[in-house]
Length: 505
Image 1 (cartoon, rainbow, N blue to C red):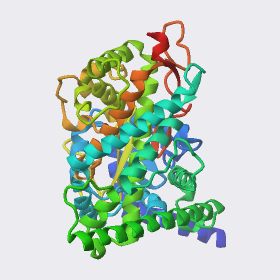
Image 2: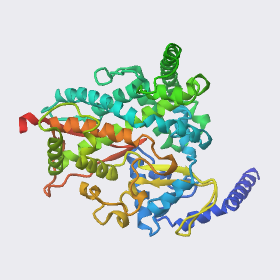
Image 3: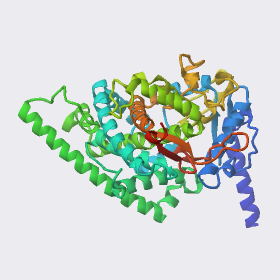
Image 4: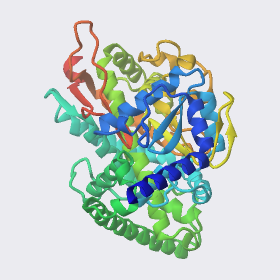
């Protein structure tokens, strides 16, 4: 009798859930997924496995969206429905009308707090207004001198490996980006390129890995389960150490600014500022952001400025190693700007590197650092296709698939062809969004591009890139194995061979 009662209650509960969420189930039917969906788990089975499997799942579902004329499909993550978007027109409307991040973003807040990338709208909106002036042309020009100095160190470090076979280039580039961002954000020289055992670097990597691990494993979504695990305790220990370190830097900077203010009567308006200085001043000084709020924003800047730029630069180097003729065009342009000189690149040099800019953009199209962005549906919204989004669901804009939409990029979408970014206009402004799109796009995209152009121009003048793997009999390389690691990365570690240009000239 008890078993029968349990079965009856379960059936009634499921019927109630189905009726309550009938609009959600109707939306799921309209989205017309061509991928097998199982009861209760939905498409979770596609994500079970390592980070390569997770990225493959996003690719499979993204391609399913491209197969539909409206560029949309459904993704059931357990009982949560997501509208997967691979159409620029739909993405444009969605990202302009929905600013709240999906609930998956809360997993990042455990480590980062309410930093702008992941923060709820009431926190994000006023903070963004503070962030935008920090990327002034005056500051960017100064930051370029730091990029240039650190890229010289990177070139020397890579020089020790030149001619000795493939190296995992991401390891070297991420050390460069960490040294650059720690100086521009906190005024602190991390020296990661020469001393990789800094406690901050270890805590940083562990924190990012913990976010990815939790997003990709639905059984860890429960706070009760996750916070009972040893991995959570370990992460929090690292977080405590990192936050204490950053708060000490903040308090020292507050004292320094106050001393300067008392001796000079005002802040020096023509003085270049680190992000830390800007956050203190622009938020209102001692009456502005708290130390914890500044830590949150600095961590966001560190995540965006380190991992994103390192991934983008590593993909460019990896791709160029496979396309020697394109690499040679880049080198010829560098010679036009720099001659045979190894001099540091300057802020004024970078706008002249138009072909390198096209190479970077084409690489970002095929290997975008952030393959998906999420939003929460908090209101009913009708898309041009006639699909009505309903509250209680989520949205994933699949940038990996959107950048491969043949209706906007042509039938050669899989071909690496930088020329498509030379003197052409996009068929739709949302067809290319390597730095996201809409009100919550990346405010530091100019910073990122300056860093990318600086480090790439430094390395490509000195070294010739060779592939770590050989092409097949048809002179084709095997497709890159991609993984989802908060960013999209090469699963084989971005292996590239470097040879000194002086030896091959």
